[in-house]
Length: 262
Image 1 (cartoon, one colour):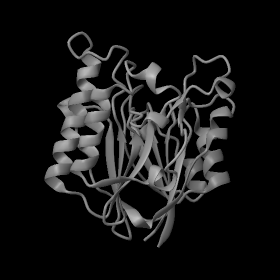
Image 2 (image 1 turned 45 degrees about the vertical axis):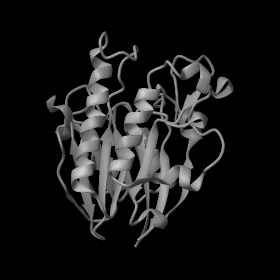
Image 3 (image 1 turned 180 degrees about the vertical axis):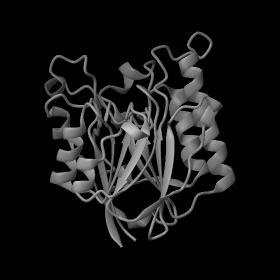
């Protein structure tokens, strides 16, 4: 069953309901995973999305913060969630598609501004979150699975606009990259985007602070699609929809796509 999947940090699904509907209508991914929905589940606007064919839905939400959701044209069932670091945050949800593929949708903590857990609790939270992900994947050894989301780390030198200038900036510090690499290795995950697009600068996020984000192009690849090793070869046609960052009242993230022949 071939299908296309997209992941997008939407930065408020209620504020940007129209942008989600536009993406659904223009690109028509079979599965769309959203992060930072910033809404309780019962307040997520569903009517318009269902009218566009996204009749299957699972989510975890909370008021004003975090929140993850999976919309699908393909029948699926809720496959649960984990409360990483025990904070009660809505940062993970999983769904099992009718073909048996499990989709994990993550929103990893951003980590604040200072890359030192001794003075920045948020940075410690981020590292602990990744450590728990690593340990879970090591114990469970996920198979026939896809993991997507805003992982808030740009791991490669060509995943940021300046490797040298961002080495001490949260999202690209060596300790974060190391933690993410250990998480990837623990689950035998393959970075599908980079398997498809192995060379060159590649970004999915551009700061709101930039006066002209497109011209300055100081981006980072924070959003990822990974597949378990047993199905990674089925992934193809990866792309990042950069123009979406330029839509009216956009998220600061662009959607990331991949197709799978399974």
